[in-house]
Image (cartoon, rainbow, N blue to C red):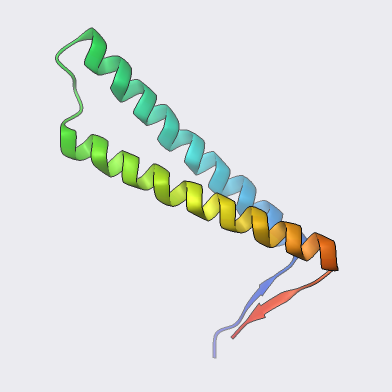
Length: 82
């Protein structure tokens, strides 16, 4: 049986890691947008859409972890998922 335990500390670490991934996706999109304006573009539309999808997913993950962290801090709780 596999179990996951979420504490304030490990959720905070996860949130920081996922926020960094979100920032990387946003930077890639900015680079792709700048690239389209400057030249013919090195990114094809499928790749840009994949990056946008990744950014949307990362944003949802960051929001969920943020909400979980607020809950854990407010109620001094630990969440166990079995």
